[in-house]
Length: 301
Ligand SMILES: Cc1cc2nc3c(=O)[nH]c(=O)nc-3n(C[C@H](O)[C@H](O)[C@H](O)COP(=O)(O)OP(=O)(O)OC[C@H]3O[C@@H](n4cnc5c(N)ncnc54)[C@H](O)[C@@H]3O)c2cc1C
Image 1 (cartoon, rainbow, N blue to C red):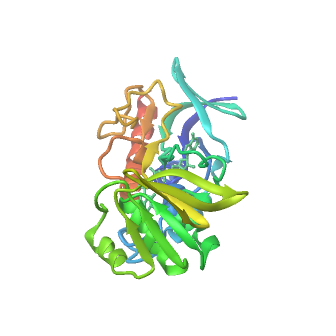
Image 2 (image 1 turned 180 degrees about the vertical axis):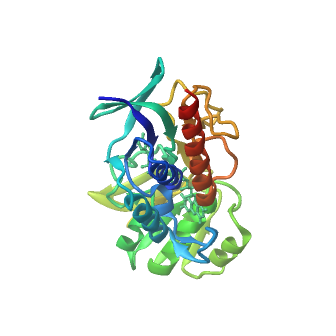
Image 3 (image 1 turned 60 degrees about the vertical axis):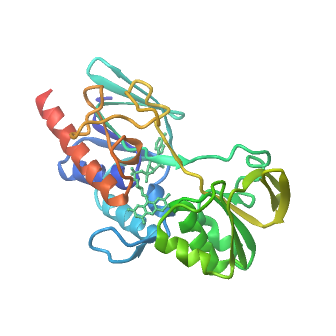
C-alpha cells in the first residue's frame, strides 16, 4: 500500500486541529489515537478558549470531535503507537495492531497522568482510584473522597468534587497549595474541604474497592476512610515511542517555531512538545502550524 502523505498521532486539541487542516487540504491522511478529545475532555470548566466564554471540557472535546468527523478522515481509534522510525524518505509508525507508513508524521500525543507509585495504586486503579475527576467524579456523589496533589489540576478536581461529594480531603506534600489564588481561596473557605498540607500518601487501602488512604506527616501516620481517590500530581509527556526524536530533560519533544523535530518530515505539536505553556488553545494552534509545515514539506520533497 502507498504511504500516507500524513499520519497524525493523537486526537487531542493538537491532533484534531492538525487533522482538520489536513482534511481541508485534501492530504492523504490517517489519524491514530488511543482516544478522541485527549486531556481537553478531562477539564471541568474551560473559560479561556476564544469564542466560548464558558464551556465544559467534555463539551469542547465533543465539538472538536464533531468538527473532525465532518470530514471523511481515516482513523484508527483505540490504537496506541509504540514505535516510530524513519527509513529513507518514509516514516514507519508501529502500533500493537499493525504498521503504517507515511511521508510525514505529526506527533500530537500529549501528556498522561503521573502515578503515585505507592502500594495499592495499581490494585485499586479504576476501583475507586482514578486520574480524572471530570470523567469519574459523579460516581462518588455524596461520598468522602481524597484529591492528591496541590497544583492547578488538583485544585480543579477538588472544586469539581466539592460540588458533589460529601467531604473532600486535599492531600498535598508541600507546605501550601499552589495553583491560582482565586481557586485556592474558594477551597479554603469551603466547609466540605479539608486541606492536609505536608502530608504524603503511603498506601491505598481497600477490599475489592477503595476504602481509605494512609498518609504520613513526618513520624505521624493516619488512615483516612474514603471511597474515592483522585490522583492529580502532574503529567508526563507521551513520547516514549519517539526515541529517535530529540527530547528535553522532561521528555518533551524539542521543536522549532515551524514544529519541526530533529528528524526531517516528523513534526510535533501540543503538550508533548517543549513549547512553553500547556493550554487547549495553544495546542490547537500548534496543531494547525504543524500541519501547514508538513504540507509545505511534502510540496518541497
Ligand atoms: C484537569 C485538567 C484541566 C485543564 N483545564 C484547562 C483549561 O481550562 N484550559 C486550557 O486551555 N487547558 C486546560 N488544560 C490543558 C489542556 O487540556 C491541554 O493543554 C491540551 O489538551 C493539550 O492538547 P494535546 O492535543 O497536545 O494533548 P492531549 O490533550 O493530551 O491529547 C493527546 C492525544 O494523544 C493520544 N495519545 C497519547 N499517547 C498515544 C499513543 N502512544 N498513540 C496514539 N495516541 C496517543 C491521546 O489518546 C489523546 O487523544 C487542562 C488539563 C487538565 C489535565
